Image (cartoon, rainbow, N blue to C red; front, side, top):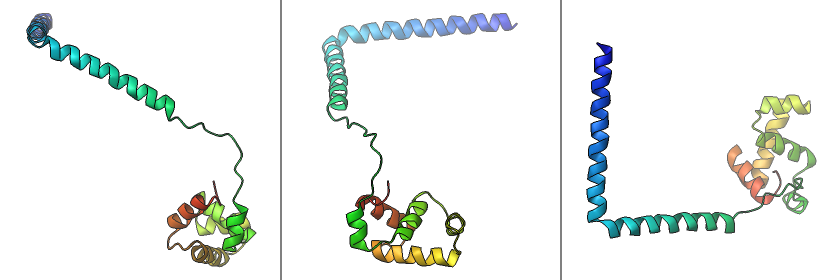
Length: 138
């Protein structure tokens, strides 16, 4: 029973492929110019993408990060606030930062509030984005 079903299924699939191939042959003969033009356009598109990717590739520098000390000094960010900022950028919570720096969570809240003022930010993500723009954190 299964053998019969599989044979009929294979025969139907083969006939569908044959009909599609014949339809393609008729279409390709009727629209040969458009087919060649489309193939040439696809080739030039691929060439343009390849050339663009090669021409506008930016080399990834493997240099170690050096913070912008001039911006840090201009904003008045202390060494401890810079440490808190880097831990904020790492995604740590106030409690985790407090444990890592061996201070109380209230001290971290104060540092974060001062960082918000100095970076003119209202949220953590905004402060991190601004610090990255200024080159304070990687």
